[in-house]
Image (cartoon, rainbow, N blue to C red; front, side, top):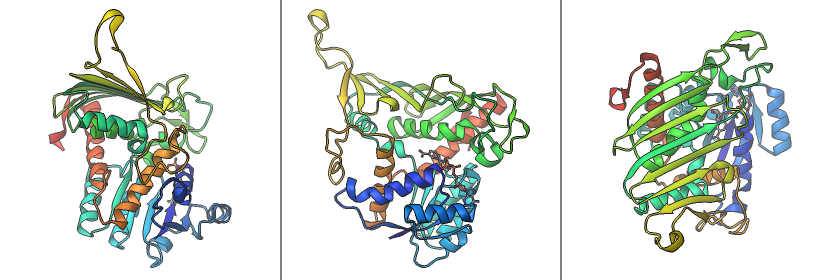
Length: 375
Ligand SMILES: NC(=O)c1ccc[n+]([C@@H]2O[C@H](COP(=O)([O-])OP(=O)(O)OC[C@H]3O[C@@H](n4cnc5c(N)ncnc54)[C@H](O)[C@@H]3O)[C@@H](O)[C@H]2O)c1
């Protein structure tokens, strides 16, 4: 399978790293390699191709999408381009691996998920956190009923990158390129994790924040901030659980701080992306007794304990990092093509999350709780 990568910024590089290193991490590396790369600037495409051995290079995505030697289109461009590119690729019969968020409107995202089914191609959205060992462990514990009926959750995804107003805004802060603000960029991950682990949303109540209404725009000129720098939500799930979601790029001291707690009738779990090798788990089944018995949160070590065919390298006790989620995600996508199986997170999941994002923005605008059924 030959893959064409569109966009070679931070995620283009992350995806290229994953493809080129799959044989180390999985016993079935699935025979994929990079055949082409496209960036907006041809010189950058040439440099990237030479440095990372990416095959032919171009500044025109059509050269890749309509090339018979390319089987898979990997979309790593800014959000506003995802819809058009993915649509062209699906119609050209290519499998598509697309970065989040899937599109910038629910209508576009739904159309893509419908087209993927109609044209019988495999399409996956990159919700890479799902493939981290502590998240897979959390999913296993929840599915096995270890925490019982879920009552509540809280999730935060915090960065500090928008605090420095002396810097130009990045495209992720500009609604005209990102399609939204921090809710799109970080919120898509947070909403997906709650959807994946706890279930579907019934309603959302959202409130956006712009702390710095004036800053330098993408081009360095004085600019009026046009997208949320932080977003706060109260959500109710179809199963009755209630929870809060906070995403922000104006949190002093934050790195890549994705944390959540999920509380059930029989137990609780807590995750922290900056403490990736562990999952905290509390069970009411632990015995009480003198001095508290064995009660209390247990730190489950998740490290590189992936079941076959993963966990091959590095050893099972080795610590993992953020890239391991991307590697697992890429493997799952390629596996779905080779075995002709449906694999989540598909474009259906991408469209679902896009719908919840849209409801959250609607709620902020109309200052009311919005039901997901209003979509
Ligand atoms: N899943 C994750 O962990 C994660 C993390 C960061 C970003 N993302 C997503 O990845 C995507 C890319 O983000 P990034 O951080 O890599 O951005 P980036 O700015 O680092 O890179 C964007 C790349 O796209 C290229 N580009 C821009 N317009 C183009 C066009 N019209 N045609 C071809 N190439 C074009 C640029 O030249 C650049 O190489 C976004 O959708 C973002 O939301 C996902």
